[in-house]
Image 1 (cartoon, rainbow, N blue to C red):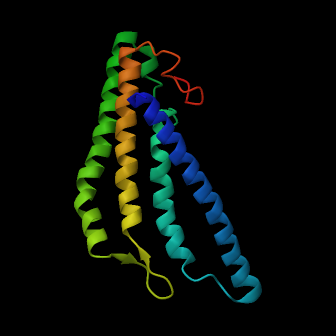
Image 2 (cartoon, rainbow, N blue to C red):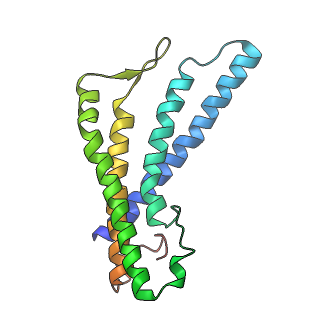
Image 3 (cartoon, helix red, strand yellow):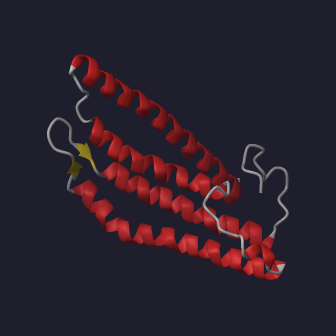
Length: 174
């Protein structure tokens, strides 16, 4: 299995995990709303769990959004340029995207380690949610996003011929 196939499969898996997480979270929010309104018995800690979950869901899906080319892209001007210039600008864009996620990783690594070792929590009162899962998900999601930008740069700029065994039939079409 090569890097492209691994990246595609991991991105899809994390996207499915995030989607299931979001789906489950909707039921928790619904139960909290019904509990508050009908029974005056809210689910304690819902706000804290939702807050942490939103960050986790976004970064679990970032790699797939990049790899499936679903990230915002304003190419209304670039499409009118010669193909060679388009390739250069595409490569620059991908490299800037990878650099952005690398900066998130380097900027958040120390805080993530500290969060885990010191047992940092968010929220007060009924439920205190550990901070480290969200922080580490940001790092892992950023790592995959960076890899996916580099994969896209390789695929789009160099246009390699991929054999059928290297292309996942369920992977986003390039």
